[in-house]
Image 1 (spheres, rainbow, N blue to C red):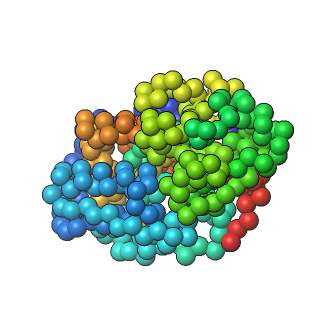
Image 2: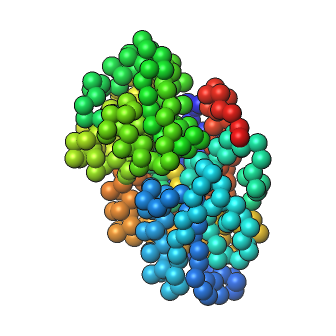
Length: 329
């Protein structure tokens, strides 16, 4: 599958997920759940986009269900440490994993994983979809995407880009950008997305690819200059920012997502109850407003639809990894 090809599961259909789906009668096992605290393992350090959304959603689920949903950060090894802990947990609905695009890339980063990436988890739902934007520092000579691409073509691997680490979602997104634009950039991995942004702000790297929610503060403060954003339309939070297509690169299409999954074997009535409660939370005005402030769109797709998305993403990033000469550890 081409790195720029839109998966068969329509992005428009995903972004317009049926948040208002009817609540079905709940089997007894779902009625009894949750009876105690639910752990939400975030396999990244605190403060990132996945962590921020997981914490806000956990607060909402705590309010709705009367039991605490508590985020635990288990970072390291490109998210595999936290994922492995969640995979080992009892499949009883009391341990969940917050995941993002990176989960679909793990088979192309590691020759061996401490869990079966394709079957270790039962997807619950996508919590949010987010475009990605390309940004440079305020002192950068590049004021539009065309000038940056032209410079990169003239000087292969001279322009540098920062990411939160090799194999991270921004790393794969920037690889896909390079393939679409026909350029070669030099990768500078940091220990986290926050450090990558600091690298751009300090002038140590030329550009960064990230979710708007991680950049809005610096953009509005003038420290970051966004050049283009993915998706088919502009976002309300950054109305002056052109899409990649408008900026002259129609072949680049990446949409980030974050979601929740449970260990394989978790009873389906609990999966369905959790899905319904997340739909309810995402439809609440305060939650929808929070996600909108991050220039993202609420998710809420069905567990099976999320499973199909994971499979399609895995196929998509296989080609990006191959073209980018990603070596598995």
